[in-house]
Length: 226
Ligand SMILES: Nc1ncnc2c1ncn2[C@@H]1O[C@H](COP(=O)(O)OP(=O)(O)OP(=O)(O)O)[C@@H](O)[C@H]1O
Image (cartoon, rainbow, N blue to C red; front, side):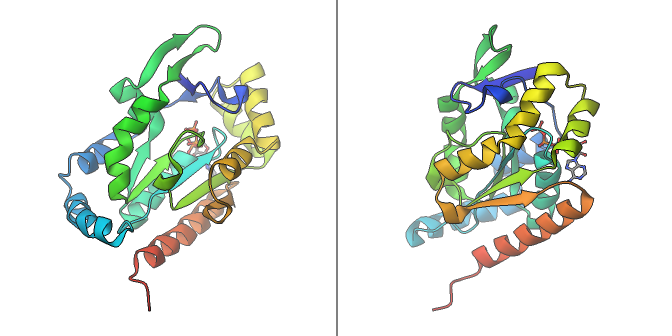
């Protein structure tokens, strides 16, 4: 397993988080290479978007303490909305967007500039769901909605224990959730009306959150009534 963090990580608490290799790389690559019909459409529409000063499709940031269910929810949401799921951990790993290993932090150091440069064009087009346990280094203009997933401490403890998290890594992440570090980071980094906290304790929560966000995406994309 490979570890990443970013230097400005609000929380030393998150520094020990391990990223897992997920299954969305292929899907994201399709989108980035414009080979999917959906993304070709998005690309064509981008011209209109610039003319209107509004993206045709929204960008959503999904953040939260490791284990709160970001990747699980983003995967389902991407299927429901046909937006592109971009898992930052996978992207950093795939494109080497880091500054190497930090012995003290015991992790690779994510290079924020490289990550932002890599994503600038696709974010400008819109239609992305970005999945990362931090949010303060992305340009604010990228996102139309910032979702912070939150999980009951006992449930999160069990999830992270099952992952093999131990000792300080486990307690640091639980403290991060108790002190709502990611929610505070989101509120500090984005305008209040963009930030929404959603509970992610069980499967029903995932279904409800996906339904809520899918409706929001549909409404966002509708032409405004004037
Ligand atoms: N709402 C939920 N109900 C039940 N199980 C969940 C829920 N959300 C996530 N899980 C489970 O918890 C584990 C962690 O989920 P997931 O990898 O999606 O979290 P994450 O926030 O993306 O973590 P990371 O930041 O480390 O990538 C998985 O085994 C997943 O099945």
